[in-house]
Image (cartoon, rainbow, N blue to C red):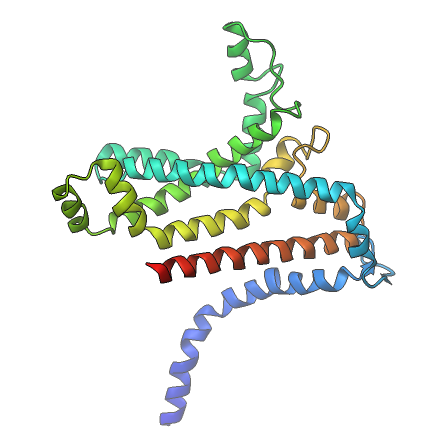
Length: 294
């Protein structure tokens, strides 16, 4: 009887997390292993009559100019978007740390775009920046600027999409940073003030070290997200103009659901997985080394 009760008490916690584990397995782990398997086949989207090709799909990647272009765009996206978002979120969080009414309102305003889907965000900004009917382009024409084509210019469209992504997602970073900053002991700031440290010195010497684990968490998650960016690009430019905004995930989508080369798309997905894994390991190793130094 005792053993049965002990077994029952042991199984109860697992019964609560079982639905999440099942969903994780069905929608994350199983597709991951399926992608590894499909990458060795020449197969269409219907998965009919698969032809085993071994590593031929991976060999084809090395000569695929669109793959290398999409990889370059993704790397460029990461280099531009991640630092801008982290720095902007840090600065705004430092201004919104105090729990007064105004700061709470602004936190809600900054967090609001997170609630909207990336599809809605992309369509909204596409309409606002439309060269013919866009409100911002209309105002620019009124004050004397030429007709700027925000959504169809290889030189500026990329940065416009990056701005949309930052506008959409930086609110969650702000909220997380605010929570971390509020947990930094007040005694450290009081000690810094006694040493005549100004606000900037307090921010650099007290706030940043105090939220370092959170900062690393934001950096790692933003790096991973930047390599997986898709929806806001797909709904605004579809990867254009001239593939200047085509990211790796956008390219994978076109190979799988427009060209119907599911095997080749899976091979590119495996490459993306390896890239993200390497970047995550390197970043996490840097985090552990930094924590050890402290």
